[in-house]
Image (spheres, rainbow, N blue to C red):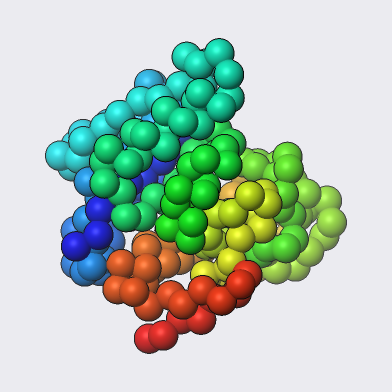
Amino acid sequence: MKNIVVLVSGGGTNLQALIDAQNRGEITGGKITCVVSSNPDAYALTRAQNNGIATEVIRRKDYDAFEKYDAALTELLKSKNADLIVLAGFMTILGSQVIRAFENRIINIHPALIPSFCGEGFYGLRVHEAALEKGVKVTGATAHFVNEICDGGPIILQKAVAVQNGDTPEVLQKRVMEQAEWQILPKAVALFCEDKIKVTGNTTEITE
Ligand code: GRF
């Protein structure tokens, strides 16, 4: 059984999708053992507590240097014996120590079809605003491993979502979450926990 540690900052609907998938028996090779938040007021912490999952808070602002924060987060995740780390709306940039310590063991969900609308500055509603400004007819979500390039790690799963007439960033964000993020993030986690993701360089192969 792999130990899954989920990193959050906000509402935690992706965390909820993971908990729901776990409760439906869809994540057979792993268990969510801890939820770590960058924000002590995140509703995601309540979701964890409601499901009997341990919680921790680590705030960037409690460290005077980024390297110290990076080292503390790395130590925290090691102390939790994390086999897999899931970024489910975690709003603090990860440092090189944690990324190297958990190479190809950190999964992020990005609300667009990478390599579109990704990289520095593309987070939250901004991603959907950019998709609407460009006028794309299809967007979606990507589950990928995290490396030192922002949104640049090996892609695990992607799912497309149609843009509709009159969409606002908020409406599109909700559709992308419902139709893509909440489906492919638990699926990617399940595949990882069953050792079904083979990484070669910057690509993956799913062995179902
Ligand atoms: C999602 O849109 C996710 O793609 C992005 O941050 C948001 C998190 O939302 N990385 P929630 O906290 O899971 O509800």
